[in-house]
Structures are given as structure tokens and as C-alpha cells.
Figure 1 (cartoon, rainbow over the protein chains, first blue to last red):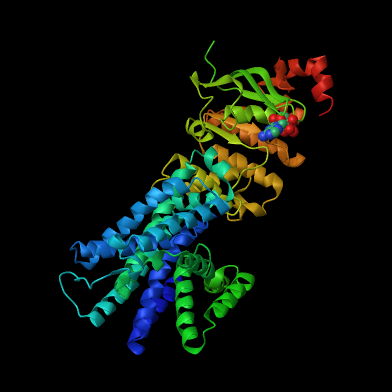
Figure 2 (cartoon, rainbow over the protein chains, first blue to last red):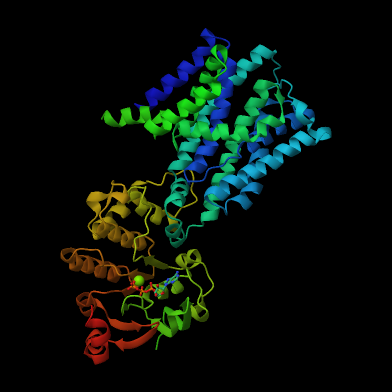
Length: 307
Length: 248
Ligand SMILES: Nc1ncnc2c1ncn2[C@@H]1O[C@H](COP(=O)(O)OP(=O)(O)OP(=O)(O)O)[C@@H](O)[C@H]1O
Ligand SMILES: [Mg+2]
């Protein structure tokens, strides 16, 4: 049942841009943000809210820009290397941050990301300041595409990665380490007494979540063709938390459903009205009050009631 | 005489001037089932906290197999084969009963295998066997916070057993467990301990349980040992009868 639903959803996404080409860009960005929101959702399992994950999103996006600038011109290689940049940044920040909990964790993530944002914005000579850096169109397995074709390749690659990475993350969450991560939320004392090192469990989760945010950032960099400091701004981080909560805490499909919902709502709202924030705010209130499992919970519950 | 598994020497700890351990020393030997009894607030739980590294004593030392573990973390001590069941159950309350068990089993074998799921056929079978031991096999798929208090206590004990310890520390295993279930639980526990060659120390308020199952009894009072010996010897002691057994 679950497999059929997922396959149907992915197929729908695959054919949508054929019917409405303008949707392709929106959907690519939605999937990119879905990856980053999934990163936030991974940490939410442990009860930790990061209001700074746009930093890893941006770190990887800038990574793409710098590496492309340095002469690397292959989509696959750029993706892998930039995600590694995000993971490494995550390992360094995480080593310091996973000692904190609750509001301290949230605020320290915010603080570190704001420092990162300021560096991106102020180091004009290195990062281009608020102008940002251009991201050229890379080759794909040696083939150089024109811009429209490349954007299509990027979209379908993102879609494929969404399925593959989604499955991998689900696997991780189902593993002993994934369960230990949820256990941090409920009882750290028992974890200690089981002989499980809580900091290692959290650091691994933190690096995975940073890498996921990084994957989203790299895809965005290619889709937009430019990286700017705003990628790392705290509102972007808040946006990711919003998506994660909207989609439903913990569920892997939830992060992508939340991102798609919000991006589609955004593009619909800005064309008819400028009350975008009002609409998002209302949507969030409704979800939190009436759908504590998030939008994904609607599907999950249906599935549970059908034997 | 053989060297004790666990040995605590001259422990001192005070909370705001209240002495929870006041120069006390204990030793527990291979194969023993040592009971600790004593009035409320006399420092029994504190003793377990010290022995498992949760609290550092002001002075004194704890030795495991002759090695100093006084300054080790609970995690390091757990990895050396000491498991603990708590006076107030410490569970992963949002997770299923069986997941609590399987995570404990995974802690000793294969926590780091990310590609394999927590639930494997082998692990599930092992978890079910232990749950069966404490009579919780019918509740395996329940969320553990929905268990009644007494059953959460049983789950806490089963989780400790899942660590395959050499030494098990039980803090009032039968409190919260109904009088009807108490003796069946103790029988099951004793046979599990014997079968697995686990040495155990238990804090207990039910004197019938102590009299029937303990191989030796320590009477704890105001952070020190007031009496020690076989159950019949200790219960024959007039001072103990008055201060501890009489009120229990
Ligand atoms: N972390 C702590 N902070 C302050 N005081 C504490 C702490 N832990 C224990 N105490 C105090 O130390 C004394 C001994 O407590 P402890 O819990 O060890 O007693 P106990 O023998 O286990 O009692 P009970 O039979 O009620 O479980 C009590 O007066 C208690 O209030
Ligand atoms: Mg106690």
C-alpha cells in the first residue's frame, strides 16, 4: 500500500512539469528544501530543534560555487564534494553543539548560523558579499547541456535522489542508531545505562542532517544559478523547521510533502495576493492544532485504518 | 577467600548536610543474591548511584574485579557488565515495549550496524523470551508509557537483563508489583539469574521476599551498615527488628 502510494506520488511529480513547464523550477526547489527539512526532521526525532540548518544548506551551495570556480565542472562530482563540505561543517559544528539541549541547542545553532551568514555577506573579496557567486551549468557525465535541458536533468536527478536518499534515511531511522536517536528524546539516563554513548549517537545524526541540508543547498545552487548569503539567513532556517513540522515530525515522506505543500502554496499565493505570510501562518496554525502528525499524518492514518 | 566482584570502601556522600553514605563499605561475591534493607531515605538508592558512577562519592572508592571504577561514567561501568534496574522505571516511554528490549540487546551487539534494522528475527525472539520471563510477552507491541506502573517496573528489569550483565543491581524490584505477582516474579528472576550466572544485589522493602530469596542481607541505616548476615540472623537481631523490620 505504502509502496503504491509513494510510486504514484513520484510518478505524478515526474509528469507534472510536462503538463506545466513552469512547475519544474518550483518542484526542484521544493525537493531541495525537502532534503534540508528532512535533515531538521532527523534531529527533531531526538527532540532537538535546529534553527540554523540553512547554514549547511548555504555551506554546500557556496561549496558548489567555489569548486566550480576552481575548475571542477561535473555535476556528480560537484554534488558529492559539496555534500561532503556540508557534512564536514556539520561534524565541526556538531562536535560542539550536541552537548546542548532544548532552547540552548536551538539558540546556539541559530547563533552559529548567523556568524556564518555574516561571514558570507561581509567577506566581499571571497564570497562576493551580498551579490553572491554565480554557479555555471556543469557537464553531466561529460555532456554539456543547454540551460533548459540541464534544468530538466537536474529535476529528474533530484526526484531520483529523493527516492534513493529517502529510502536510505528511512533505513537509518529503523536501525539501532535511529532508535537510539529517538531514545535521546525520552530517556538519556537509560541510554547511558545501556552503555550507549549519547554524544556519538547525536553527532552521527547531526552530520547526517547537515549532509541532507547540504544536498538541498547544492541542488538549489544549480537550480537558481547563483548563491547568495540569504541562503544562510535565519528566516531560511526557520522555514526549514516550519516545513519539518508541517510535514510531520519524523516521517521521511513528511519532509518532502511539507516542502511541496509550502512551495506550491507560495507560488500560488504570490500570484494572487501579497498575503503570503498570512496564508502560511494560518496553514501552520491549522496543522499544529488539528493535525499533530502533520500533513503526512493524514496519509499515514488512512493506511493504518485499512488492514 | 575469593576476590569480590564489586567492592565499595569507606563511601561518604552528603546532600545538604544529610549523610546518604557515611563511611560505609560493602562487598558482593560471585553467585550471591545480596539484599539491602533499610528505612526510607537511608541512602540505599544513593549507594547504587555511586556504584554505577551516577554520583561521585566525596571520599571512598568502588572496585569492580579489583579495578577502580569510582570515576567512571555510568556508560563505561555498564559496558563492563554491570546492569541496573531503577526504583522509578527508566524506559523509552514513547517506544514500544519490544523496541525498549531490542535496543538494549542491540547495545551489546551491533549498535553501529546502520544498514540492518533494529528488529531482526533473532533479536525479536530473544526479546520475547525475556519479556516472557517477566510476563510481559502479551504487551510487546504496546507503547511502554501505556503500561501500568507495576508492569513498567517489570520491563525495566527485563531491559537490564537484556544487557547480559555479570552483576545486576535491582532497586526495589517488587515495589509497585502487585502482591499476587510478587512471588512469581521473584521465582522467574531467581531462575534467570541462576541460569545466566548473574550475581545480583537488590534493595527491597518486602521482608517476606528478602527472607525467602536473599543469600545475605545488609541493613542500611543513615548511610551506614547497621547489621549484616544471613536473613535469619539479621531478622533475629533485636535492633534491626525495631528499626527496620518493625516498621516495614
Ligand atoms: N540528588 C540528590 N540531591 C539531594 N538530596 C538527595 C539526592 N539523592 C538523595 N538525596 C537525599 O539523600 C537521602 C538518601 O536518599 P536515597 O534515595 O538514597 O534513600 P533510599 O534509601 O533509597 O530511600 P527510599 O527507600 O525512599 O528509596 C535522602 O534524604 C534524600 O532526600
Ligand atoms: Mg531508594
